[in-house]
Length: 226
Image 1 (cartoon, rainbow, N blue to C red):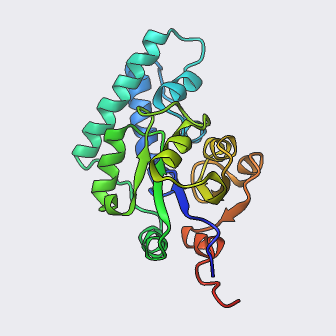
Image 2 (cartoon, rainbow, N blue to C red; image 1 turned 90 degrees about the horizontal axis):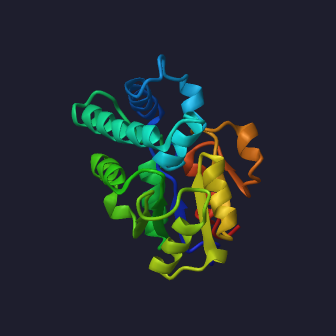
């Protein structure tokens, strides 16, 4: 049986790792540092997860000077790295992530990551969970324009030699799904991440995943002989 996809691209935060609490904590420390008196609710910060830091701060801090946003970005990076290095928060894998990646790779499917994290941040996460061996390529916010621009996926396609028609983008935010559509690839929405089902539905994903192992039948694994 020929599988329908040669390449599966994953978002990171909210798709592979449960990092919203860490992101919200670091973002609020940064916002308070640059003058936001009380920070923002966790739910508000969840709305911008997936964007690059500069794009996210532009949404969270509208009508503020670019210089102040730049300070907030630098403060976020400082606080996230400090807290991560001090084991002040956890960013656990979602259930079934390692098993799903193992099954996909065993069937010869190429795996990649497209994330709003910086390269340093992604490398920290992959090393923390010993995931680096699974991925043939990755693109981060300091290597390509922010989602939903299609450049991250386009660069991954170039790097892997895979075709857009045989590629699937998996993510938990509308930015992931819109990026996928903009790049001409099919998309799968996970329902356990940062954006709720109602918001995700606006981006018209082709597939829905209640848990990451639900991806296996989508790509044809376990359906042989049916």
